[in-house]
Amino acid sequence: MRTATFTSSSPWAMRLVTDRLPIGSPAYATVTLDPSTQTARYTDATGQRVGMGQHGTNQTNPTTSQSGGSDGNAPQPQTADDSNPDYSTD
Image (cartoon, rainbow, N blue to C red; front, side):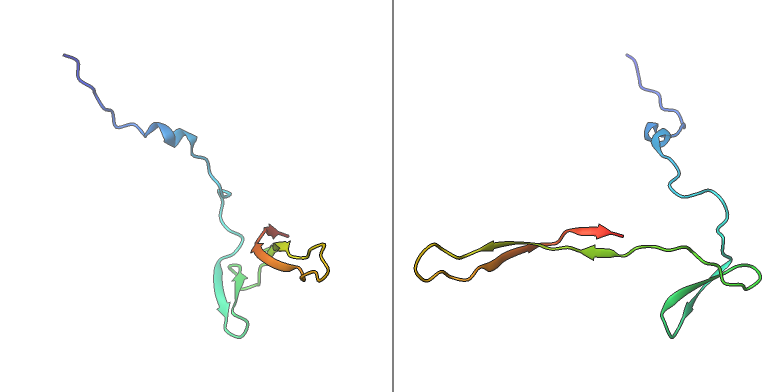
C-alpha cells in the first residue's frame, strides 16, 4: 500500500502571488490628521509636508429607464422606472 507524503514547502498557489504595492520605503515618515479639515497630512523625517499626488473620486452616473406615454388622445407623462448606478473614476 502506498501512502502520501507531505512536505513543508509552500502551497502551490503561493507561486502565483505577486507584490501589488511597490517594495520600498514610503516617501513619508508620519501621517497626522488635520483636525479642522479632517484630511491626512503626510510629512517626511524632517517635518516637511510631502505631496502624495492626486487621486480621483468615484462619480455616479445613473442610467434610468423611462416608461409611459402613449399614442392616444391623452398621453401619460413619462416616468422613471428605475435607476441603475454606473460608477466611474476620474
